[in-house]
Structures are given as C-alpha cells and as structure tokens.
Figure (cartoon, rainbow, N blue to C red):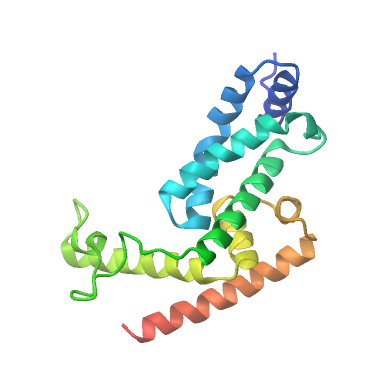
Length: 197
C-alpha cells in the first residue's frame, strides 16, 4: 500500500470534514498548524496575534468547508484564509495603535530581550546576533504588506510563485516582481542600519 502525500491526505480529510466527520479537522490542524503559526508570526510579528489568527483560520476552514474546491491544494486555500486574516489584523492595528511590552526603554535604549543573553553564547556575540535578527525582523515588518507577504511565503514557507499567486490572488509575474522589489528594499534598509552601527 502506498502512503498518501500530504495533499492527498488533505483532500481526504476535507472530504471527511464535508461528510460531517469533525475529527478530520484535528488531522488537518496537526499537519498544518505549526507552519501556519510561524507564517503568521512573521506576518504579524506578535505571537499572541499569530496564535489567535491560526486558530481563527481553522475555524474559517470548518465554517467554509463546503466551499473548498478539491482541485485546489488545501494548504494554498488555508494560507489564503490566513493571509486575509493577517491583512485585516494589520489594518485594525493601524487604526488602533498600542505600545508593545517589547518597546524600547527610552532611558536605556534597550528592551528586555537585548539585555538577557542566550545560554551558550558569550554576551557580546549574543547581543550582536540579537541585534542583527531584530534588524532583519524589523526591516521585513516595515515592507509594504504585498511585498512582505510575498517574501515570507517564498523565503520562509517555501511556496512556489504559482502558490503565492493563488494565495495573494495575483499573477505569478506579479509575485516575481514583488519578490524583486522586496529584496531591493530589504537590502537598502539593512545597508542603512549597518552604516549606523
């Protein structure tokens, strides 16, 4: 007996879910929730929001199970749902700004994450690594939403141009252009940061 591919398992589970077997949702969540959570963290740069929207994405899968087209990859459909939820959350944040607990302390110029060193690294290396990671995270977060989504889906989620086009509802050529522009803007932003250090 040949093992089913992930896509075949997903299609079978969606058919089970449509037939009223709600436990099929657990199988889908088991296969996809961790990667989806990490994708949403990169999009939203907030673990709590990412966890909330990952759950909400699976709620939407359940609510819209009858609309799923089995000719389409389930993961593409799931990421399209998650991307729309993330876009809505980012718009909501723009209208309702708040101060993060990770915000920089105006007196010291550092947040708590920069002060606490990682075990196994010397404090200087740990601080330098944390600063670089934070610079990249911040630079990605500052990209326009359409560029950021394309970059995260391609670089971190290993999605093809065609899949990204389906998720973001654009052409593969538009994805290629967005990736090019995202990389250019990242290089420029990171070069400025390096100049100032």
